[in-house]
Amino acid sequence: MRFHKYHALGNDYIVLNPADFPTWQPAPTGEQIRAVCHRNFGVGSDGILWGPLTAAGAGAFGLRIFNPDGSEAEKSGNGLRIFSRYLSDAGLAAQPVFDIETPGGRVRSTLRPDGLITVAMGKVSFDSAAIPVTGPRREVLNEQIALRDRTFTFCAATIGNPHCVLPLPEISADLAKRYGPELEVHPSFPRRTNVQFMQVLDRANLRIEIWERGAGYTLASGSSSSAAAAVARRLGLVDPNLTVHMPGGSLEIEIGDDFAIQMTGPVIRIASGELDPELFSVRP
Image (cartoon, rainbow, N blue to C red):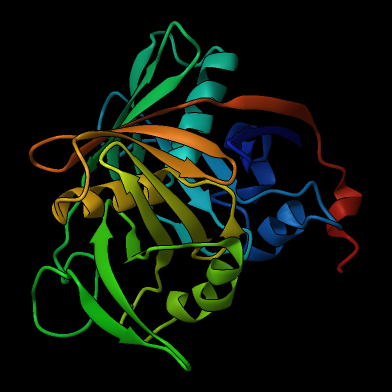
């Protein structure tokens, strides 16, 4: 049972090729996912990339993305860059440009000569019905959300998965860890949500702290960077080309006139190895 571990700015994923797991078809169970991802009792990761799979559309690699709690994510920017690197390392991608089909939509990945990877993430929408956010259909911009001891101004967006972006003058990891869990499961978000605490530094730079749906506090996130950058652009706070800074590092984001996102960043290979069946016989 081969595994391949990579990280993208400290956001680490394990790639499991379904061809190596004949008894796990059509996908790993929640219990198997939690065992592999556990930081103490397993290999440890922020999620599992299950692929390549047969894609719904021709000419693409299919991918499913699982959070460490066993739930499934529609899309992951860092996960897509990692999966792209794996496809290249494994000799499965014959060309430097190829498509990946996810439950959150089809994306195009480009392996650059400088070692960075660019992913065309798709278009960001602020439509409450698409995200989704409860209430009448609208663009979710600069609304109020009340928690137990604080009220925040927030914007919501989707790039194939849901995001709640909170523009603030100052942000911190403690802030994300304190309020992220409540916001993730707030009744306003029927499918839960990823949460970004966003500080605009200038028109070309912003910072975010991230609470990721199904994974918790995260050092970096490609889809979170894309959503936060798009919100900042929609509010008129940044230019189309900018850098998003996170605790794990930075991503370059290009925003089109239609809020189509190009995301560029690195991927580091950590290890390949074999999962021992004993991992699944002992429950924490």
